Structures are given as C-alpha cells and as structure tokens.
Length: 231
Image 1 (cartoon, rainbow, N blue to C red):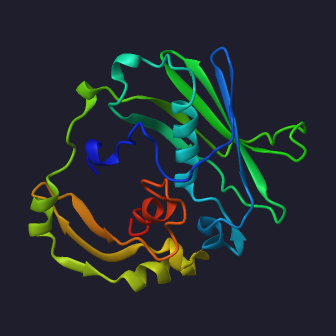
Image 2: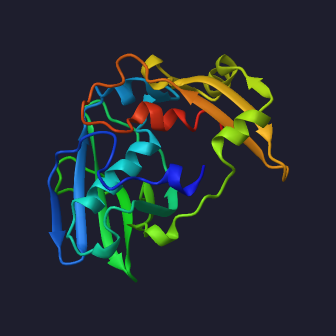
Image 3: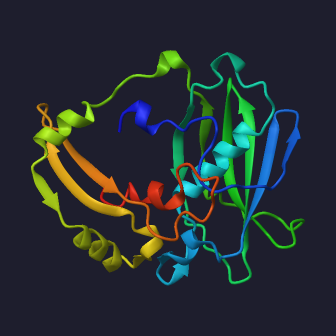
C-alpha cells in the first residue's frame, strides 16, 4: 500500500466515539465503551469470543490524537497522520457485561506515544497491567509523502491469478476466526508479481449490508478490517 493510500486523514474515520477526553499537560486519556452489540463485534469472533477488531484500536488512537491539544505541529495540519511502531500485543475480548478501553497518550521527543489498556469496572479499579496495543502517532508532513509501490492501474495489467474468496474465509475459519456477513467485505482478489519480483494482492471491497450503521463513518471497521483478510 502506498503512503498516500495508507494515510489516515485528519477528519478521522470509522466509529464515532463521543466519550470525552481528559488532558493533563502533555498527557491525554480517553475511555471508549463497547456494549458487545456493535455489528463489528457481533460479526467478529475468535474461538467463540467477541474480539475488538485491531483497526478499531487504531481509530480510537487517531481520534484521541485529533481531539487533544492543538499544539501538535500545526504547520502540518491537514496533511494526514502517521502511525508507527504499532503493536497489537493482545486480543481485546469483550465481556458479557460490556468492556471499556482506555487510551493513554504522552508527548515524548516531538511525537505522541500511546498505550491502550482495559479499564476495569468500576473505573477506579486498577487497570490490567499489559497494554493491548502501543505505538506512536504524529502528523504526516506533506514533504514526507512518497509513493512506495507501482500505480494500481499498472498492477492490474500484470495481475494474473484469481484467489478464491471462499477459501480465504475457510482458512480463517480453520483458525477459529469467524467473520459474520457484515465483516466480510472482500468480493474478489487477484495476485501477481512486480518486475522486481515482489508479490502483490489486489483486493476488491464491497460494503456489506448492515455495515454502514454509523452515518459519520468514512472508513468503517468492515472495510478496513477486510482489507487485511486476504493477506
């Protein structure tokens, strides 16, 4: 994916998270609550348990960053966001009574470092020790943009093999990763090899019925998560 295609635009994307953020100097925190009834949880289960899609972690982080203090290198506003050193260290299972994820963001060395943790119920209880995700986020300056792959139209010409979509989901099912119909956006996949011998995939994504429940969504969990299903 080229840098341009993989950027997160500053208006944000995916689920709308109305929870207030809390700012203390260079420390930003946000707690997001999940009931378990969200479509991207009902249709995303691992070993029989509802698991928060990793792309939703990233969205929470981006919204926390964007809603924080307006002192994050304002000269680059509007140029996109960069997530780096992103680690999903543990699956975030949703409890039967719902779950809450707390994102803590600290300003260090010109960029924000973040961790995502489960917040216990009641909120005053101690957070679980291990972070579920961690990494860094910063504005992506216009000068930092660069194409890292060949143009899509050129890749379409040299793509040669059709990959079975049903086989993709059968393979995931064998790993006990179950995607319901609202989290299956892959409609077609082709692969091929560039002139440099690098393999690529072209994945067609169609928004499933019922996956557009949030009208403010730009790139919703179904489309964004499905982009990784063929990898």
